[in-house]
Length: 446
Image 1: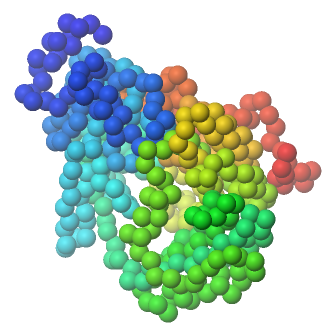
Image 2: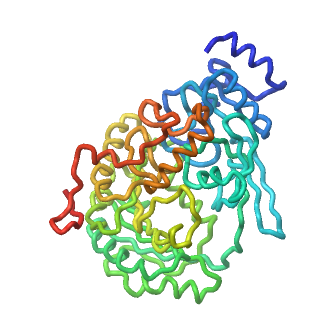
Image 3: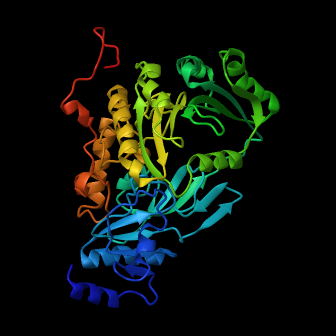
């Protein structure tokens, strides 16, 4: 872009505007200092704005319009592919933009996007691609409200505030775990898959393959965490697993007291800072042989800090907008089985091997999947379905309606070319291969 245009635009910025241009002191720290993944991208924004007020965000969008570049956003969530760092874009970093308030009468919390935690969106405020302030809910700018819940990095505006309806805290949070050797993977997973349908939505169930501390081999941990309001309710919720767990586990506990704080600590320990990450995921079809499909992912981890995860989405995965059991929104990709591979390592020399493992694992699993969760995806590497077909088409239209010039950077695909078209929302692997099935139509491994 012409330096004269930039100089003219800079003169119109407010005094002490928190902008760091490419080439200036502090640029590199502003560009990647808050990036969690130490696989840092070779992409260089035109400038970084470290916003602390809404006015800073408004001016950032106006500046981008004035000099003819895009806007990308970094807030408080995770992005393994580092979507916020884009060429020919102004990066708006919301890490210093903090807001939190709570209305005791309504139970509604008002928070900024950089605030982390378990959030359920009820209302949104956003700035459009032209710098206008918009309020979004089911009645006002309802199409943006619909898109916000599921659009991910393709949302065609900058969210500045969430209104969250809180719920009473459960008084008894308890967990049970059953840890098996790798050789017992099939036994462990077949067991937990067989009993998850008996659980309500108050119990989270996962199976994780990892190298536990102090052990030299891969182990599989089946973990159940239940949220109840009495010890009796918690024990009752976890009893079915305790009564049916197959023998052979090397460690176990039953109905052990836990808390959100402890669970967050465990997550932080499993996802250490200053490490290199490659992540991908699939929603495995309900009719697939899940145990066979995930076997390689659970028994061949490429590094000692890597882990693979299966998460039971049932019974929440049986909700639908058509049945009136969940809101109509962009978020629509569902199955009973969520799988993710989290590859974690430290040495750059291991990049090719670790990334190659993830690619090969997902190449196998995706043939038995409905699609993927875009929050743990990298559109530069693998493109598949992220929404049901109708919701995907509607979302791409909303993006074009609200941001026809592609001012918001959107989805970072291969060579960053998606623009206003967004993502195709198709299984790209189907273009050249046939999905493996048995003669009666059931899935089988290739």
